[in-house]
Figure 1 (cartoon, rainbow, N blue to C red):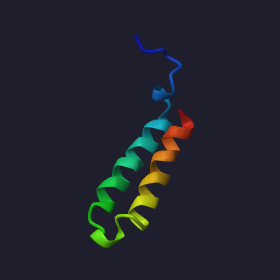
Figure 2: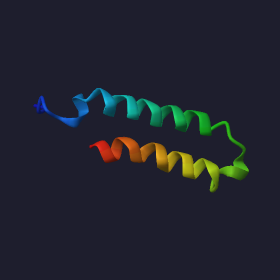
Figure 3: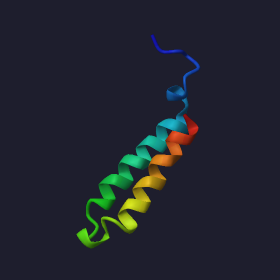
Figure 4: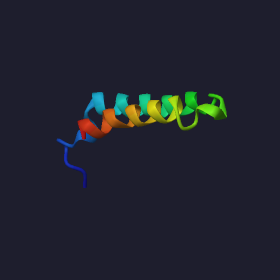
Length: 54
């Protein structure tokens, strides 16, 4: 049973997860030459938002 005060119930956390998923979807369309550059940096920063809230 999930605690009613869980971070998962926070709207800000839910939106941050949605943003991270959107960033992953968008960066899939980036050139393969960017996989270790801009793509990686954007994905790591997007994941850090919900991670830090949790």
